[in-house]
Length: 271
Image (cartoon, helix red, strand yellow):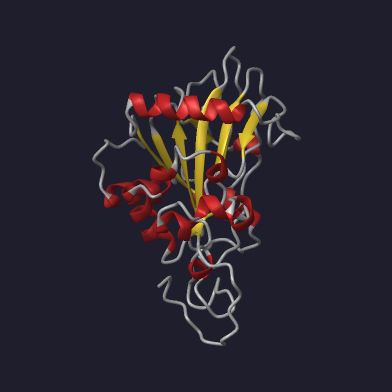
Protein backbone atom coordinates (compact mmCIF):
# COMPACT_ATOMS: atom_id res chain seq x y z
CA UNK A 1 0.00 0.00 0.00
CA UNK A 2 2.85 2.42 0.81
CA UNK A 3 6.01 3.02 -1.13
CA UNK A 4 9.00 5.32 -0.67
CA UNK A 5 9.65 8.63 -2.42
CA UNK A 6 11.96 6.91 -4.92
CA UNK A 7 9.45 4.24 -5.93
CA UNK A 8 9.74 3.01 -9.50
CA UNK A 9 6.96 2.93 -12.07
CA UNK A 10 7.03 -0.87 -11.90
CA UNK A 11 6.61 -0.86 -8.11
CA UNK A 12 3.72 1.57 -8.26
CA UNK A 13 1.94 -0.44 -10.94
CA UNK A 14 2.44 -3.69 -9.01
CA UNK A 15 0.66 -2.11 -6.03
CA UNK A 16 -2.09 -0.77 -8.25
CA UNK A 17 -2.61 -4.23 -9.73
CA UNK A 18 -2.84 -5.76 -6.26
CA UNK A 19 -4.75 -3.19 -4.20
CA UNK A 20 -6.05 -0.62 -6.70
CA UNK A 21 -4.24 2.21 -4.91
CA UNK A 22 -0.85 3.15 -3.53
CA UNK A 23 0.35 5.87 -1.15
CA UNK A 24 3.72 7.59 -1.39
CA UNK A 25 4.12 9.53 1.88
CA UNK A 26 5.63 13.05 1.89
CA UNK A 27 6.04 13.24 -1.88
CA UNK A 28 5.96 17.05 -1.58
CA UNK A 29 8.20 18.94 0.82
CA UNK A 30 6.77 21.06 3.62
CA UNK A 31 7.49 24.42 1.99
CA UNK A 32 5.72 23.39 -1.21
CA UNK A 33 2.71 22.19 0.77
CA UNK A 34 2.43 25.52 2.59
CA UNK A 35 2.73 27.50 -0.66
CA UNK A 36 -0.05 25.45 -2.20
CA UNK A 37 -2.30 25.76 0.85
CA UNK A 38 -1.88 29.52 0.94
CA UNK A 39 -2.80 29.94 -2.71
CA UNK A 40 -5.75 27.54 -2.55
CA UNK A 41 -7.02 29.35 0.57
CA UNK A 42 -7.24 32.45 -1.63
CA UNK A 43 -9.41 30.56 -4.12
CA UNK A 44 -11.52 28.79 -1.49
CA UNK A 45 -12.67 32.12 -0.08
CA UNK A 46 -14.65 32.59 -3.31
CA UNK A 47 -16.04 29.04 -3.55
CA UNK A 48 -19.48 28.01 -2.22
CA UNK A 49 -20.14 24.79 -0.35
CA UNK A 50 -21.58 21.77 -2.16
CA UNK A 51 -25.05 21.48 -3.63
CA UNK A 52 -25.79 17.85 -2.69
CA UNK A 53 -24.65 14.95 -0.50
CA UNK A 54 -21.99 13.87 -2.97
CA UNK A 55 -20.34 17.29 -3.23
CA UNK A 56 -20.87 17.74 0.50
CA UNK A 57 -22.93 20.50 2.08
CA UNK A 58 -19.95 21.46 4.28
CA UNK A 59 -17.33 20.90 1.58
CA UNK A 60 -15.85 23.40 -0.87
CA UNK A 61 -14.67 22.24 -4.29
CA UNK A 62 -12.39 24.17 -6.64
CA UNK A 63 -13.45 23.21 -10.14
CA UNK A 64 -11.59 24.49 -13.24
CA UNK A 65 -8.47 24.20 -11.11
CA UNK A 66 -5.99 25.26 -13.80
CA UNK A 67 -7.97 28.42 -14.48
CA UNK A 68 -7.56 29.52 -10.86
CA UNK A 69 -4.11 28.53 -9.64
CA UNK A 70 -0.66 27.73 -10.99
CA UNK A 71 0.38 25.79 -7.89
CA UNK A 72 -0.42 22.36 -9.36
CA UNK A 73 1.02 22.77 -12.85
CA UNK A 74 4.11 20.72 -11.98
CA UNK A 75 2.10 18.01 -10.24
CA UNK A 76 -0.14 17.57 -13.30
CA UNK A 77 2.95 16.68 -15.35
CA UNK A 78 4.90 14.90 -12.61
CA UNK A 79 7.18 12.41 -14.41
CA UNK A 80 6.39 9.43 -12.16
CA UNK A 81 2.66 10.07 -12.34
CA UNK A 82 2.63 10.48 -16.11
CA UNK A 83 4.70 7.37 -16.70
CA UNK A 84 2.47 5.28 -14.43
CA UNK A 85 -0.66 6.60 -16.12
CA UNK A 86 0.78 6.15 -19.59
CA UNK A 87 1.37 2.48 -18.83
CA UNK A 88 -2.26 2.06 -17.79
CA UNK A 89 -4.18 4.36 -20.14
CA UNK A 90 -2.02 4.32 -23.25
CA UNK A 91 -1.15 7.30 -25.47
CA UNK A 92 -3.09 10.54 -25.62
CA UNK A 93 -4.53 10.42 -22.08
CA UNK A 94 -5.78 13.73 -20.74
CA UNK A 95 -6.92 15.51 -17.62
CA UNK A 96 -10.48 14.67 -16.67
CA UNK A 97 -11.54 16.20 -13.34
CA UNK A 98 -8.88 18.19 -11.48
CA UNK A 99 -10.45 19.63 -8.35
CA UNK A 100 -9.40 20.97 -4.98
CA UNK A 101 -11.49 19.54 -2.14
CA UNK A 102 -11.74 21.09 1.31
CA UNK A 103 -13.86 18.78 3.48
CA UNK A 104 -15.38 21.00 6.14
CA UNK A 105 -16.01 20.38 9.81
CA UNK A 106 -19.07 18.22 10.38
CA UNK A 107 -19.13 16.80 6.85
CA UNK A 108 -20.59 13.30 6.47
CA UNK A 109 -18.95 10.52 4.49
CA UNK A 110 -19.71 10.02 0.80
CA UNK A 111 -21.20 6.81 -0.51
CA UNK A 112 -18.67 4.43 -2.01
CA UNK A 113 -18.28 4.99 -5.73
CA UNK A 114 -15.97 4.43 -8.70
CA UNK A 115 -14.61 7.35 -10.67
CA UNK A 116 -14.96 5.44 -13.94
CA UNK A 117 -18.63 4.89 -13.13
CA UNK A 118 -19.50 8.00 -15.15
CA UNK A 119 -18.82 5.97 -18.31
CA UNK A 120 -21.31 3.25 -19.38
CA UNK A 121 -18.66 0.59 -20.05
CA UNK A 122 -19.32 -3.06 -19.25
CA UNK A 123 -17.07 -4.56 -16.58
CA UNK A 124 -14.49 -5.93 -16.52
CA UNK A 125 -12.73 -3.50 -18.82
CA UNK A 126 -9.20 -2.11 -19.24
CA UNK A 127 -8.26 0.90 -17.14
CA UNK A 128 -9.78 4.08 -18.51
CA UNK A 129 -9.43 6.42 -15.49
CA UNK A 130 -6.55 6.89 -13.06
CA UNK A 131 -6.70 9.40 -10.23
CA UNK A 132 -4.20 11.11 -7.97
CA UNK A 133 -4.89 12.65 -4.58
CA UNK A 134 -2.39 15.19 -3.25
CA UNK A 135 -2.74 15.62 0.52
CA UNK A 136 -2.19 19.20 1.68
CA UNK A 137 -3.26 18.44 5.27
CA UNK A 138 -2.60 15.34 7.31
CA UNK A 139 -5.30 12.84 6.32
CA UNK A 140 -6.58 11.23 9.53
CA UNK A 141 -9.35 8.90 10.64
CA UNK A 142 -11.14 11.88 12.16
CA UNK A 143 -10.84 14.60 9.49
CA UNK A 144 -12.03 12.83 6.36
CA UNK A 145 -9.20 10.66 5.08
CA UNK A 146 -10.31 8.95 1.88
CA UNK A 147 -12.07 5.62 2.39
CA UNK A 148 -10.89 2.86 0.02
CA UNK A 149 -11.90 -0.76 -0.57
CA UNK A 150 -8.65 -2.61 -1.38
CA UNK A 151 -8.97 -4.97 -4.32
CA UNK A 152 -12.39 -3.68 -5.37
CA UNK A 153 -10.98 -2.57 -8.72
CA UNK A 154 -11.18 -6.24 -9.76
CA UNK A 155 -14.84 -6.69 -8.83
CA UNK A 156 -17.51 -6.94 -11.48
CA UNK A 157 -20.44 -6.91 -9.07
CA UNK A 158 -20.42 -4.75 -5.95
CA UNK A 159 -21.84 -6.19 -2.72
CA UNK A 160 -24.01 -4.17 -0.37
CA UNK A 161 -22.00 -1.28 1.08
CA UNK A 162 -22.13 -2.76 4.59
CA UNK A 163 -20.42 -5.91 3.30
CA UNK A 164 -17.44 -4.08 1.75
CA UNK A 165 -14.17 -4.12 3.70
CA UNK A 166 -12.71 -0.62 3.70
CA UNK A 167 -9.68 1.14 5.14
CA UNK A 168 -8.71 4.79 5.50
CA UNK A 169 -5.97 6.36 3.38
CA UNK A 170 -4.22 7.88 6.39
CA UNK A 171 -1.19 9.89 5.28
CA UNK A 172 0.80 12.98 6.23
CA UNK A 173 0.52 16.29 4.41
CA UNK A 174 2.51 16.24 1.18
CA UNK A 175 1.67 12.62 0.41
CA UNK A 176 0.52 11.35 -2.97
CA UNK A 177 -2.09 8.66 -3.44
CA UNK A 178 -2.54 7.11 -6.89
CA UNK A 179 -5.66 5.02 -7.40
CA UNK A 180 -7.52 3.39 -10.24
CA UNK A 181 -10.84 4.70 -11.47
CA UNK A 182 -12.39 1.28 -10.85
CA UNK A 183 -11.52 1.33 -7.13
CA UNK A 184 -14.42 1.81 -4.74
CA UNK A 185 -13.68 4.80 -2.53
CA UNK A 186 -15.30 7.78 -0.81
CA UNK A 187 -14.49 10.99 0.98
CA UNK A 188 -14.54 10.37 4.73
CA UNK A 189 -16.51 12.18 7.43
CA UNK A 190 -14.82 15.10 9.18
CA UNK A 191 -15.55 15.16 12.91
CA UNK A 192 -12.84 17.73 13.71
CA UNK A 193 -13.03 21.51 13.97
CA UNK A 194 -10.78 22.08 10.93
CA UNK A 195 -11.20 21.45 7.17
CA UNK A 196 -9.17 18.80 5.38
CA UNK A 197 -7.64 19.92 2.09
CA UNK A 198 -6.60 17.71 -0.79
CA UNK A 199 -6.32 18.11 -4.55
CA UNK A 200 -7.48 15.50 -7.01
CA UNK A 201 -5.83 15.46 -10.43
CA UNK A 202 -7.71 12.85 -12.46
CA UNK A 203 -6.78 11.50 -15.90
CA UNK A 204 -8.80 9.58 -18.46
CA UNK A 205 -7.99 7.69 -21.63
CA UNK A 206 -7.60 9.80 -24.75
CA UNK A 207 -10.66 8.28 -26.41
CA UNK A 208 -13.02 9.33 -23.60
CA UNK A 209 -14.74 12.64 -22.96
CA UNK A 210 -13.24 14.26 -19.82
CA UNK A 211 -15.58 15.18 -16.99
CA UNK A 212 -14.65 18.87 -17.26
CA UNK A 213 -14.59 20.85 -20.50
CA UNK A 214 -11.17 22.43 -20.02
CA UNK A 215 -11.15 24.16 -23.40
CA UNK A 216 -13.97 26.39 -22.11
CA UNK A 217 -13.08 26.22 -18.41
CA UNK A 218 -9.50 27.49 -18.73
CA UNK A 219 -9.35 30.87 -20.53
CA UNK A 220 -7.33 30.99 -23.73
CA UNK A 221 -4.95 33.65 -22.37
CA UNK A 222 -4.01 31.27 -19.53
CA UNK A 223 -3.59 28.32 -21.88
CA UNK A 224 -1.21 30.41 -24.00
CA UNK A 225 1.17 30.68 -21.04
CA UNK A 226 1.20 27.01 -20.06
CA UNK A 227 3.87 24.48 -21.05
CA UNK A 228 2.90 22.39 -24.05
CA UNK A 229 2.63 19.17 -22.04
CA UNK A 230 -0.01 20.72 -19.80
CA UNK A 231 -1.81 22.28 -22.79
CA UNK A 232 -2.12 18.83 -24.33
CA UNK A 233 -3.41 17.32 -21.09
CA UNK A 234 -6.10 20.01 -21.01
CA UNK A 235 -7.44 18.82 -24.37
CA UNK A 236 -5.25 20.59 -26.90
CA UNK A 237 -4.10 17.28 -28.33
CA UNK A 238 -5.05 14.63 -30.83
CA UNK A 239 -5.20 10.86 -30.72
CA UNK A 240 -5.23 9.80 -34.34
CA UNK A 241 -8.09 11.92 -35.67
CA UNK A 242 -9.75 12.40 -32.29
CA UNK A 243 -9.62 16.01 -31.15
CA UNK A 244 -8.71 17.65 -34.46
CA UNK A 245 -10.04 21.12 -35.31
CA UNK A 246 -10.90 21.59 -38.98
CA UNK A 247 -8.33 18.93 -39.82
CA UNK A 248 -5.58 20.61 -37.80
CA UNK A 249 -3.91 20.00 -34.46
CA UNK A 250 -5.73 22.15 -31.83
CA UNK A 251 -2.47 23.68 -30.59
CA UNK A 252 -2.32 25.57 -33.90
CA UNK A 253 -5.31 27.58 -32.63
CA UNK A 254 -3.88 28.46 -29.23
CA UNK A 255 -1.88 31.44 -30.50
CA UNK A 256 -3.78 31.93 -33.75
CA UNK A 257 -7.55 32.25 -33.54
CA UNK A 258 -8.08 32.83 -37.26
CA UNK A 259 -10.13 30.09 -38.95
CA UNK A 260 -8.33 27.85 -41.41
CA UNK A 261 -10.23 26.46 -44.41
CA UNK A 262 -7.45 25.01 -46.53
CA UNK A 263 -8.70 21.44 -46.13
CA UNK A 264 -5.23 20.18 -45.25
CA UNK A 265 -5.04 17.47 -42.61
CA UNK A 266 -2.29 18.79 -40.32
CA UNK A 267 -2.09 16.96 -36.98
CA UNK A 268 1.59 17.26 -36.10
CA UNK A 269 1.25 20.08 -33.60
CA UNK A 270 2.17 23.74 -33.78
CA UNK A 271 4.76 25.04 -36.19
